[in-house]
Image (cartoon, rainbow, N blue to C red):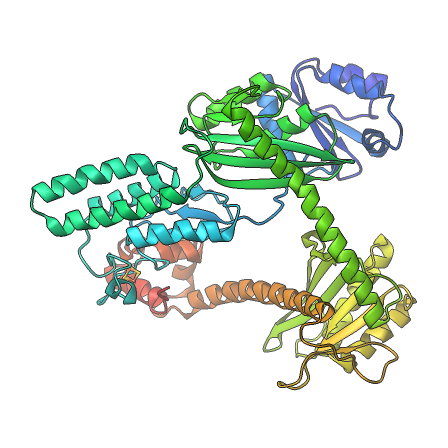
Length: 607
Ligand code: SF4
């Protein structure tokens, strides 16, 4: 792993001519990760770079202080390593896929003894099957409703033995494996049917169900046959509503790419059994490289063992390293994957749809920008601000009875949440609750850092009234940035009164009608700060609850508690263990294991 003066002749001489990955670094930050079949040749090409200094590559090269290389045996290994280093470091000059929106997924917990179906927004490596993303929450809810109406899988988070099933059983939503004898084979069959629907195999499933209905009818099991009949009817109704875009019934992902100025929009349409089942879009801000390089980088980052590619991927052009990509994707899928650039027929129509979706990203952004510009100028006018507030931050302070006090700061840029700017501040000051002191501490820490990094907000929104406002005025004054930031405090002082907006230098609050877009926007930002604070608190609370749950276990001393944690790895895993599994821990017999299990589950909720 050589490291020397970047791109000097000595350094280049020391670099291998074999395949591998190179990382360009500023001091500590990884700026760019690339791969090459011949590392020395690839790095030497940067030496010959003749583009403008203000081009993106020029700017990156000006910042590089060090280059590190990692040798691999094959180019494919380099491709995989490059993707994993990009995921790890998220270098600012690489193509990084950030979901445009937080799309919902359907998760089937196939690894569970009694699987269930749920909605999630996160794909994790837990052995579950994930479907989607669904382009709209309503289309996803429709699918979920169908699955739940047809197949009564459990709804609760965890199946615990119960003496009586919950209401879900009474209303026919669950077979109640918690309390009733449920045939494992029949339950598995329901799960398999759900998977078929989610895989888009509705036609095949209808055929399977028809056969079963006939067999049941012949055996005079009329109730069972009626059940199959109802399921077939529901499925047929769903099929009627779906728009078939391709008659071939193949599974395809269709990539569309569109450019606007320095930005690139990428849309991926998911065609399952000839039906568009969802879409996902990405916005890449000023990415390095040609369309072919961007497509290659997108594909290698997008697919993984958690998100396997379909048999066919349609692309607007051949990506760089198409052969290598095909090999890698086929490996992930376990069978061959085709990368096609369609020229005629039905596939071209799909490509057009994907391209239009990619173009739509910019149209949507323009519309958002326009409506934000209007709102920003209204904010300035109505609240008498010194500037149009393109960068807004809002602070919320929360604590649990004075302990674990946390300041939560949310950031909005051009009217939209800018998650990279969200921060939590652990209050370092007092243990006893004092909202003013905590607010002061958070403001000072945020603004002092902002002055150094030159990223101060245009507008600071405070959750509170005159008190919070004069405190913030004081902080700004002390830091000498009074004119740099506008301050607004928002408070509802009495339950029946509306929100009041306070501004420095104004005795009376500004009262806006409840439907005012300015007021609604500020309330949204304030509520987002609350939400961000509450979510963080829940996490802290669940951590401390877990610790105290373990402490509260009766009948075992600290040594055995330690041993339990050591053997199960975490309290969560210990809670997942059965009494029989706990019994195997040295020094814990059947009676104690039963008691531990019972103590850990006595407060379990049913949802
Ligand atoms: S607790 Fe309710 S939802 Fe869970 S398995 Fe029992 S009946 Fe089903």
